[in-house]
Length: 285
Image (tube, rainbow, N blue to C red):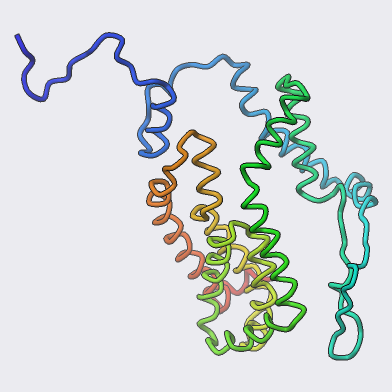
């Protein structure tokens, strides 16, 4: 006898591979039975170890005594062949570069990575190979971020950012609503909130001063809006898909996260508008 139409048929040993089940769950949001299999407690601890170590190291680095000791390694030097003067003839601060050798976030993450390799019992050769593979995978993203930072230096020192800021200030009170959108767009294109802040930060401050808004508010709005653009940045989509074995499915992931990014951006814009008025103005320092 054959089963009725629409009936479920159990086929022995016909199981979807765990990797496929995980991939399906990532894209659809559906819970997979493969994900519910109980893992040994040791493996769970190992899985959470990298995140715990990052939190621990960054927390310790903020202790005043430790923070001062780390800051002692900071080095400052003048950029070769760079001699930019302000309108009053004085050299601008950007001629000198401050390099926080140890206290910078990247170095602390590197420390966390070394500690994670030790906790997981990885050989130094294996850990170094993974690090090099990660750098190779992110090589174009690194090139993009450094290029945008270089462009930001040129725009800020040449006065281009200030000139654009004066033009943007014509939006008046509407600038409070558009400010997070600018940061969102910058990160969506560059993939880096740091790059978007460097590129548009001075522009936002100049526009805020010209329109009578709080420079602190618009600078923060640029950064906050940028965070919401992280999830749709091509670089981040590529990294996320590669990490879970979904290379080539970046478009599918983008369709899933884009509505959330736009919805959260709208909420952020409304919050910034409220903070620019008496409604939420009390939240500003």
